[in-house]
Amino acid sequence: MRAAARIVAEADGRGGTRLSVLRGEPPLLLRRTGAAGGPATVHLVGGAAGPLGGDDLRLDVEVGPGAWLEVRSVAATLALPGPPDGSVAAALALPGPSGESVAAALALPGPSGESVAAALALPGPPGESVAAALALPGRPGVPPSRFEVRASVAARATLCWLPEPLIAGAGCDHRAVTRVEVADGGTLLWRDDLACGRHGEPPGDVHTDVTIRYAGSTLYRHELAIGPQSPGWSGAAVLGAALLCDVPAVEEPAHSDRPAGAPLTTVAGQRPCAASPPTPGHVPRPRGTVSGRPGAPGDGHAVGSVVFASSDPSATHRATSHFSEAPPRGESAVMALAGPGVLATAIGPDIRSVKATLDPWCAARLQDLAESG
Image (cartoon, rainbow, N blue to C red; front, top):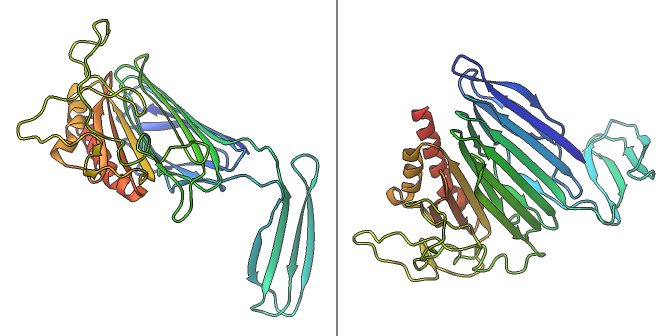
């Protein structure tokens, strides 16, 4: 399945935001929610199952000068495998009509000129069932499913991307690609949560690729791969409990072009950040432990990250110091990025623990933006 959706938000000239374009195709259906006037809120509604193997989905978001757009989803996104090499069968049971039986057959063209056959039988007495069977030819060599989001945020505009988590269902093979461009003076709150499998089942394969640029320079670049095709993904180097650990101070090379006073930063799997000066009374944790408790490899099954970018230094400072004022639950960290932005990240044994950490942080950022806007 191929589907595309587009949102264009513009200032309405009366202190609010209007949606000049709100267009979607199943399964990417868009609905404006909330009160009229003021910031615009759009919910992404799944109009069909998926993404399934072979699906190619794209969402484009454009926020014009002075506009404020908040994008959410009504439910989590579940990535599933596509049809296997054999056939897919579905059964439906419904009460049947009284004293009659009906048989119907339907033939439709298949994906490659074959046919799709469906048979429906309705037996008579009330309380019995209507049985429906649908057989679809398998599609060997189905490519991974893909969901690409491209967003642009103009100067004096605000975009808050706060969807429900992506769930890596067993057997899926999914690619999530994000590209965001924020103009100088724009504001961005961008969140991505990933649950590695449903309860009691192993995850499929998911590869996320996120790039956020601010004022023409890369602010955040991150890739994460989990699942059977990515050995070690649940270990300490990726999503295990030793992911977020105290690190020794890093001496900056003399030739570095980093602006004076700007902090060294880290993206998971790359170079560590410079250790902050110790605060009075602070007892450093041993290396190899995380915020909350000693590391235990391989127990991280959900991960969340939020990037907050703003040209207001006081807003980014409050975002950086949030966890020192309100200690988080579980394994988490907040760090300044090499630019006007902050990254908050958390891992946990399930998505609830991740949300318990990041939900208050996001709520505080939204309140801060509302009060300053």
